[in-house]
Image (cartoon, rainbow, N blue to C red; front, side):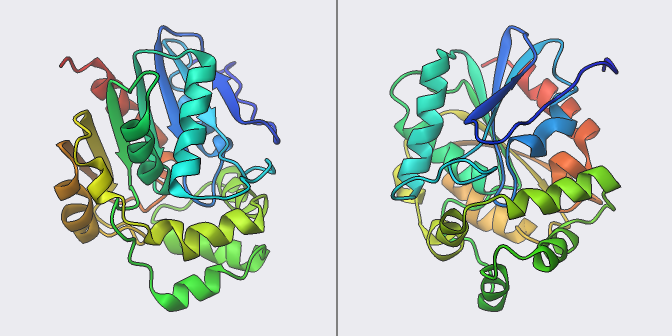
Amino acid sequence: MSKDVQVDTPQNVPYEIVGKGKKHIVFVHYFGGDAGSWKWLVKRFAKKYTCVLLNLPGFNNTKNLKDPSIYSYANFINQQIEKLGIKDYILCGHSMGGKLALYASQIMAFEKPEKIILIAPSPPTVENMPDEEKERMLNHPNREEAINTVEKVTKRKLRKEKKKYAIESQLRIDHKAWKWWITEGMNEDISERITTLNIPTFVICSKKDPAISIKAIYEEVMPNLVQPSIMVFNRVGHLIPMEAPRKLARLIKRISKLKY
């Protein structure tokens, strides 16, 4: 990785582009994050890949959707891909972004991804978050709870810059978008709607993830994918792109080179 590669993530924009390589990867962030949550990862792709980092509506101080839903967010993802004229791409989603990436791929009419990568994905069924945790998280924006959330979902200690970003990104989320995911989005079952999604799909998860358990991955994610493969990390938590960017980058590069 070149030390002079810079990844800037301004607010109020639908996407950022990093790199000028021939291969394209479109990244969809986790709930609580935004385009900048990927910056420690995509620095490792800048020479040979073009990375499109999306800011979902209502995240990173962007304008929220009028009527947020799994469909409207998936449609937003596809609109950006079509707008940029991207073909022969990999769609990569983290947590909430994983669920949205699956549905976006299903309804994509312009150009479907050649591969899908799901990082610690929210299940296409219902994400099993305890009611008391939902109540805690609905207290937003709240810096103390944002700090608490980062500490609860990570296993590796984040460096100061990463931890600050993971906290601040939560505080830049529109309250309507935040509430929608906790009360509606994570509870919407799209499993029946992706039964014909016949695209190679790679699930990258952690054995010790405090947010999406390995049990949920095997019981709620894998059975609902048509062409699944799984790679399990150890000693990391839910924020894999921040906790283990180097290891994750190596794995994504290997996946991108697989032929089907």
